[in-house]
Image (tube, rainbow, N blue to C red; front, side, top):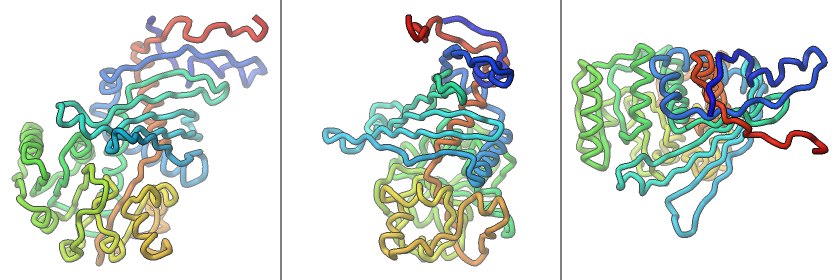
Length: 363
């Protein structure tokens, strides 16, 4: 592998000659490690949240292609899956690509993360892939940035939450806390609940290491956590709803339903429901999908986050507000392109010599 200098065009001048009537050229192919991804993202939480907002607005304006995700399931490993998220985003970003992300819950017992992923970026004009990035960090970061954006915009017009509760405390919960803290959120109380006591204790240790001054409570029951929190983060691996009691939400909290399958449909039917994309979210037996099956319609949906950003929807203050993001591939592409540009600008972009060869049409 060789290192290149800073690259300002999307794909190392792959399209630089197109406007002048010249033929596009094949871009060099880069491999970006998880360490370089972290270096490009850590400390840039506000910038990443702004980027995510830009992508939601582009998607809402139709300047994207985001087809359904494709799920690979295994008869011999029923809890595992690998998901393909193809997408394309326009505007100033202009990149196509694919995220390939696996979820193997049994990894946790072995002491390694549940999810692993790669992201392929394709040149907008030639279609050639120009980068492969470690993407579990990108995926976690775009999920957390989306949650932080939703927390900010959905809490406007109501008292800003001061008591946060984390229900499920793995890597995603950690990233969401990082992005909330990195965008100015502070809390008077932090609650923690997990069905695995060691996980709850570990997350409490992480919170203490961040230097937070808020008291941290590890709750014994799900009910205690929910009732004690104004902002609730669900980040579990639940495959079916396990929270059924509507009265636990009588204090009308803001709920970041990141894991999508925790809440009984009856809870959603008495809440204001915001999703990232209607067609994407209402499938694969997510809680909103189950609510649609139960009612036979989508009338329980209040709107999308882009509707809120554009001012077409104002979340109510007299109901629980539930944000259910399915996770859009265009967000991964945007963060991947951001990482690529940041890495190139620092001179750390490593390309693979002769990755593409035999490029003459007739030999």
